[in-house]
Structures are given as C-alpha cells and as structure tokens.
Length: 561
Image 1 (cartoon, rainbow, N blue to C red):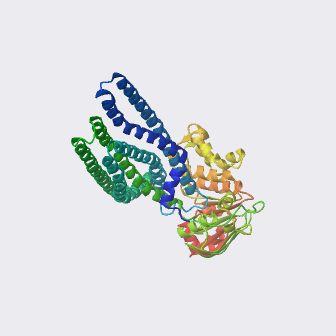
Image 2 (tube, one colour):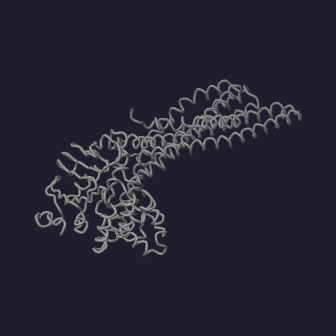
Image 3 (tube, helix red, strand yellow):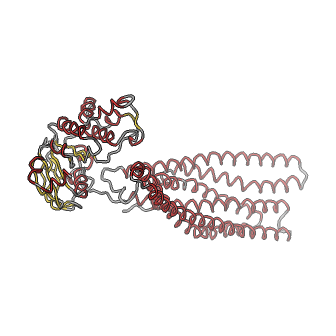
C-alpha cells in the first residue's frame, strides 16, 4: 500500500501519543482554568461584593488564586510536552527520510536535486512535527469551548446552547477555509525546495562556472527560480491572510452574537449582575480558543501539504529490486556481461578474468555511465545479465554487491577532515592507506601540504587543486582494496609524468585483484592487461593498447585525439 500524506500526518501524532495526550490534558486544564476565571469573578460579585461579606470575598479570592496557579502550571508543562512531541516527530521523519535517501536500492533521488531532498527533510519534517503542538492546542481549545459553554448554560440556557451548537459549524467552516491554504502551501514548499536545490547546485559548481565565464547565466537561472519561489510564497501568504482574516471575521460575528444575546438577557432581568459579568467575561474569553482553533487549522493545512511531499519521497520505488545477501564464498572477481542492453549499451558481451587489469574505452559517455551503474548495481539491465563469479547481480543484495565491487566515480567527493582521514575512510587495513597513497601519487600531495597527511581539507576538498583531489579520491578507492575495483577517468586532471606513475601504481597496488579502468588515457591503457573498445554500446575491438592503436583507426581517434 502506498504511503499517503495523511498516513504520515497521523503517524507523526500517533507515534508521540504519550506526549501528545499529556500535553492535550494539561493544555485542556489551562483552557478550563481560563474559562473559569470570569465565572469565579462573577461569583465574587454575587456572593461577596453584593452581599458585603468580607469572609466570602477572601475565600473566593483564594479560589481565584488557585485557579490562576493551576492554569499557569498546566500551560507551562503542556507546552513542554507538546514541543517535545513536535521535535521528536520531526526527528523521526528526518531519520526515516535519510534512511530512504541512503537506502542501498536507491530511487529516492530520481528527479530531485539534493537541495530539494534537504528541504523536505528539514522544513517539511518540521512542519509535520509541528502538528503535535497544533493538535494539543486544538484539543485544549475545544475543551475550553465546552467548559465555557457549560458555564454559560449555568448562567443562561440560551447562551450555553448558542455556544455549544454554534461551535461545530464554525469548525467545519474553518476546515473549508484551510483548503486553499493547504494547496498553496504545497506549491510554496515545492518551489522553495527547487530554489534550494538550484542554489546548492550552483554553489557546488561555482569554480567551474567562474572558469567558463558563466556567472551571469547562473545568476539569471537562480533569479528565475527564486522569483518563482517568491511568487508561490506570496500566494501562500495571501491564502494565509485570507484564512486568518476569514476566521477572524467569522469568530467576531459569532462572539458579537453571544454578547448581544447576553446583553438582552441582562436588560430583561433574566440574569444577575455577577452572571452578566461572567457572561461578558466568557464571551471575551471565547476569542482565545476560537483564535487557537483558527491557528491550529492553518498549521494542519500546512502540515498536510508537507506530509504529502514527505510521502512522495518515501513512496518512491527503488531503482533496483530483488536480491538478498552477498556473493557466496570468497569473491574471485570474475565479471561477466551477457547480451546486456541498458540506456547506452546494446547487447554487450564482456568477460573479465579474476585478477585482470582491464581497460574499457568508449567515446559515448552514456555507455560508460550505464556500465558503471550496472557494475555498482545502481541500476539493473533492461535485458541480459551481469554476473559476479557466476552469480547474477540481480540475485544479490546491493549492499553485498558494493562490498565486493567498488565503483569509483570520476567526480567522487572529498569530505571535510584531514587528508589521511579521507583516504582511510573505507580502508581495508591501516597498512593499505600508505600503499594506496603511494599508488595514487597522493603521497606527493601530502608532502606539499603544511601538515602533510594531517592537513585538514575544506568542504569537498576545495583547498586542493583538481589533480590533487583526483589523487586523494583514487587513493581512497585503492585503500578499500575490494575484490573488484572500477575506476572512471581517475587521472584527467594530472600531468603526464604523474599519470605514468599512477598507472604503474594502480597495476602494482591492484596485483591479483580484478580492476576495470574506464578511461581514454594512453598512459593508463598501456598499463592494462587488455583493452576493450566499445562502439554503439557493444564491443567493437579488443586487445592490448599497442595492438589497438596500430590496428583500429576508431580506437586511435578515441585515445590519441
């Protein structure tokens, strides 16, 4: 069954039911105390002031003080319980969203910018969590209306019936007024999330944009996106103002009616002076619970819109399905593709022997991307099979596949922390870190830094040059020492001498383990055991780098131009 927005909303409340119930009960006590204040004041007038009884006056003042003490304590602890429920519900939603986005089977990120997902996990989760506060406040407001209505019944049956019978239609009208706000809040959050995603995307590529002189185009793109977000926000704000104004008008008319009926009863002598004071005080008090109900309705409207966005992320189908567990027995590293078709691949047949260092050359980026995604099981082939040691990857859990087959993307990110920590993040052993750094020529990077490998890098390694980042990322992949390692253009930003050293370092470091290098670098390809040249999504030629350079004009054009 698909996850729906209302399921998310009620799960946020039901998952915190202890805190919500405690907050609602205490908040109801606060509202009941507020409703009793004018009643007690009316009794003070009738029982003490009118009769000139000092003893009764003292007693009722003490009662009034107790009422104030109870309602003050109830408000404090109800707010604490409701806020705790709100924060814990939002935290659980953020955790659930994070687990879904990071799920090995993927899919949640499809069609969404990273900034959009961050916005859903922060602002939308906060709004859904906030319905716990609105829930407790709404229950308390209803309790206040009931207590106020019952108190008015004791003063006057017509007044009490007017309040008790008029409240349900008022709540229905509030729900109808909240519908436009819900729709526009959904659009507002969609546009705001998209603007956040575009901003994060532009900041991440700021150096590239400056390098190609595209700052003006980037600014214009963000300006358009931001303007769309602003338009949606203004529409939502207008909907909020219409909602709040409409509720204020409706509740004002309702309270005016209550005051009018009470005044006519007092003029007719049907109620005493104290009862008139109590009735007027109760009519004024009713402004508070009705305002709270209006506010809670708006919070629920925005919460429903955010819950729908969260549900959309959680209900996204996984990119890959099926499979359980890891490869049976020790991984030898034999890779086999049979009649594989997927995006840029067309009936691809490919065999990689255990321990082989294979070069793959293709002039089509879509084919290279498809091959990387299939080997890392970020996607399953549309047709054909991809096997590891004779077992189809579709029969294995993605986690199990990725422990055996590590795909090092061309644009792998570095993280804030020391250079050593970046390389050692997934190291098979402490000894493998030094070996990997030497194999990737990252030891030269460390020697050039002020504190060597202990030097702290900035976010995404921006304190390093492009070539230095590539070497550190390559060292991290080599340090993991997986049975199968797939590298994609690991040396595009380094000079020729360093590239030759890296080529021999990869061969030395990966001796005895299967390695696939998807690249067009002659230095890397010359160090491989065999090269496969792909055209049209399938194998067009294979052999050593030297043989292919000599015999294949298309290969020469791909790697030497």
